[in-house]
Image 1 (spheres, rainbow, N blue to C red):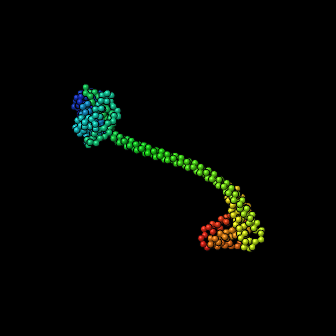
Image 2 (image 1 turned 45 degrees about the vertical axis):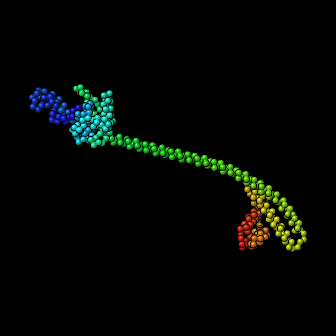
Image 3 (image 1 turned 90 degrees about the vertical axis):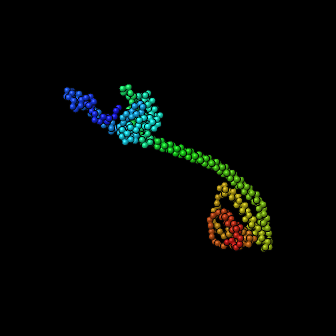
Length: 351
């Protein structure tokens, strides 16, 4: 494949001896027409060769470039095809990035005769390596082997593929990292769930133990209150006997105070029984209308000695207020208030 521009001023007619001044042209009009068509075809081929977007070259098997188009020169970093053919005298060592690549190309070409989309790397004149795709044909002409090739620069595509491959690796790395992180989170969640289940189980056990202890406490309170009420009743019987006897005023007053104190103690024991019933939701209020003053008088009588021993003054303000509730439960609440007031008051008085 000789370069079409090698003989720019020579026509097909000149080559076969039928120039503009040849008289033989007049005797062969059909031949003249065929020559014109051949010349037109040659010019069209030359135009395609010179203006092709991809590089085209012809070389012998020793690596010497025989013909090349401008696109091939530009691809290899040379100003024109003549410069390319002048500087590159052995493609394997000068044009291919790796001489072994050229050797491998020739080996496959001899085996297969032609190669399509054969990818390799070329070395530009500036020392820049580019990636190319080649369609190569091995030709036999007058006993001489030559190779003809179309060359396309695919450097941008290869670089894009490399960047895409790198991005895919990074993405896969991120996916693996996220998957690992999710696995760790899931593992922690399962551990927390197991811990919560264990905690819940322990709480249920503790609740059962607390309920059992509370039940035991209720039984103890009921039993203790019942056992303590018996000697308390006996003491009240003795005091009741003393109250029936004629006594001097000081002794009678003392007996009355003992009687009131025993009533308070008995009510406290009864309260213990009521507490055990409250825990079992067995207490039902007994509502009635009564005067609050009666509760105040009982509290004053019960807690006045305690206040005097503590050096405090217990005062009760008279009232005519009536209320509608359970007097025992209200008395229990008021007794608790007064007891705490006396216990935590260091000086002064309690109203």
